[in-house]
Length: 302
Length: 314
Image (cartoon, rainbow over all chains, first blue to last red; front, side, top):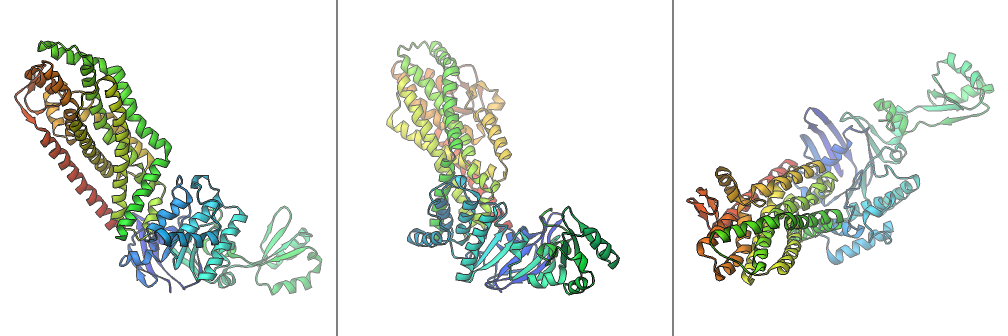
């Protein structure tokens, strides 16, 4: 295990930010850590990365306790923060140089590492420019380069793609995936985009500082998410047929949706009521549904 | 060794952050220069009249107006440099506060760099930046003195440089201690405004201490900043007073000039319009001891704050 957290507790005055949280992350996996704003994700990440002190519990990173061997642990962690924390007026090069120095990377060693990151992230055109003049996507590439500058074993991504356009989000993910596969990097991710968590090896959902669900995306979807059938035609007919059968229907302008109790019932319904099935689609339950079911909150609205 | 290299990298980064913020640099530099212009424009005449009043009282007639202008300029420059060493230090320490506001500090906390290295880097960078700004102001001041009347000797110039280093050390440590507790831009503005408006008065830079009520003068004499002003006053003005004595100003006239314009800081006693009666005159070496002693206390406070903060975080 690269991260082992047991009974972690952290309070800010009366507010319990993290309340008896336990989970573990295996080496090399992409681990998604989900929760609404204020659920305790950032607090947990700040404790793992050594920014905050815990009130209680055990936190081991790469087998070491950060409060006992902070330098050892910090050498193995790279963090991409929700908002860029680099120096806006300094050039990307100066930012990377100053941060590399904190890990004892100077001179030739820094040049070599920068070249590797340049190959990975295509930084050439932006290295000499001040951060304040870079686009959101370019800044993110520099943030990732900064987090990887010391070749960490664990990369913590705190909502890395929030505020980025879909194309840039894809570019960011491609880079992370490529690096992860090449180097066997472990990634701990928090995100508001549920489709990003769907590709994770394991997911933990927290609410009010407590773990409320955990498992692989498939396990979670199987346990918490229902499939849906969506009708685009014969809506009144479908309503008449399905309401007496106990289906809860949600009607929108162009379609009507019904939650299915298992995909196996569809074949029976089609056979029995073919007249309502001339324009429809079956939607698999996704991580959005899992999140909604588990926390009772829509992650995009909170 | 690596920790020293990290410290060097951090100091370099902090200095770059300061100079890349053109507005911050401009404000730090322009404030003392504006003060110089305002002083020369509005207060020069007042001091020239005061000096002439003392000369008249001792029956001394000065024919070379350059000495008088230079003497007034020296008094004004010593005031500005003493005040600016604190106000500029507070302003330029904003890199430390910005790191808290913009969460850059969190980024550093995820690295293996020690908290003490980080804190020392802010102090060293602020010391270098403030010193550079002060030297720029000093250069402008020397150009002004050269234009109106230069009588400073090489040894006085060296002592002035030493005084500025001591004053900047004091200002930087004071800024480090005060701004350790600030984590918002509003806080920085509030402290800057308070210090800018108050410090000049409570260190006797804006007005000669001889003009204060005796009780107030004694209180101000106990503050270390006053002695930062005192050493600068002595090294800026002594050569001018010596020149005046060589032209015929009596010893008592010279003493009166030094008493009235704070070269002779006096604790206790009474100022009788022209010179101190009684009281203990504080020698220049004692002014250094008080100023550097205050630096040592501030350093101890700064180290304690850093230590407590690191302990809380670890």
